[in-house]
Image 1 (cartoon, rainbow, N blue to C red):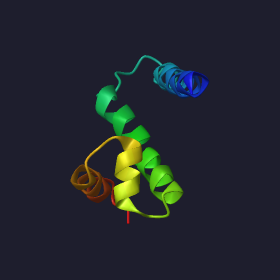
Image 2 (image 1 turned 135 degrees about the vertical axis):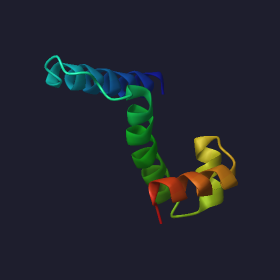
Image 3 (image 1 turned 90 degrees about the vertical axis):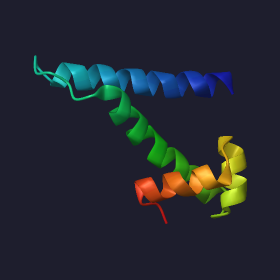
Image 4 (image 1 turned 45 degrees about the vertical axis):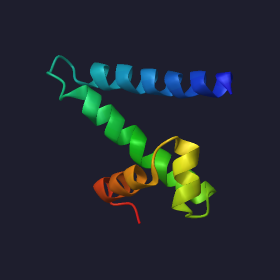
Length: 79
């Protein structure tokens, strides 16, 4: 499990570094919200698929309340 955490962190790190390099001196948009939004949606989608759409199981896997999962699904327009 520890190796996977490092792989995810490495992917985020590389993506943020590339984003900053691609700005070529321009000011970045608010990055925290951008990164969270871009990580959270695919995370929820993959976990829901793994749970065969069962929101209770997916919420448990994510470590969040089922109502929170539903709220985030609405925010990200996940069916």
